[in-house]
Length: 102
Image (cartoon, rainbow, N blue to C red):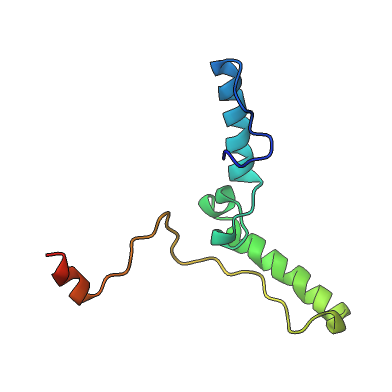
């Protein structure tokens, strides 16, 4: 969030901070496409519209490929939705690693 281009150096009041955060959260959830979720918005994934959006993207990509296949190295594919999404995913541990920490 602090790397957002319009993040202010400081807020003049708590009200200004709350207003900025409300706008940021709305943008982040409804407009920003996240690479970790197949370039969908969190709202699209949460409300179950991501598969439909992905299907429509694929239709568009297929039409572009059919119209100008010379522009592509291979047939384009819309990003798949991941089956699992985590924040700070836990490290994969092996049995020997678990025994060392026991």
